[in-house]
Length: 119
Image (cartoon, rainbow, N blue to C red; front, side, top):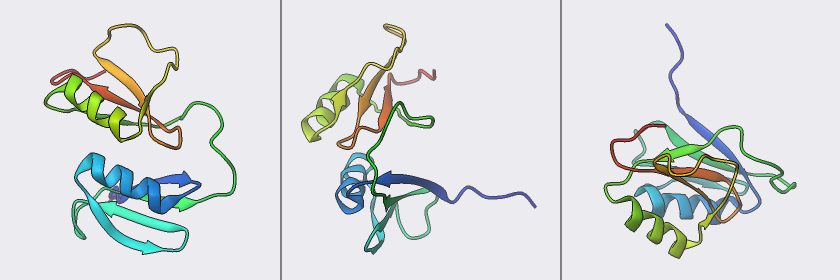
């Protein structure tokens, strides 16, 4: 038998804050919390989830892995995310390809796709 994907881990300077931010973005909730480690998922049995772990160093450079979000209404979702603390970033992406690159409050890039468009 092969492996099952349990989740993804994100380094963070403030795991509790960033986990709650992403939980609000995705409609998830906190499933586990300890000092230095906070996990979120749709529920305790839903996978993959996302774990946020405390690290002392700040993020440096472009992510090598990122999340793609596909909302029903891309412009409205981008506005909501920016209002929540996301910011637009330029990582050298081509213009008007159907996705917008944003960064979360700690600078982790992610894409917001147009519905039905996969990069």
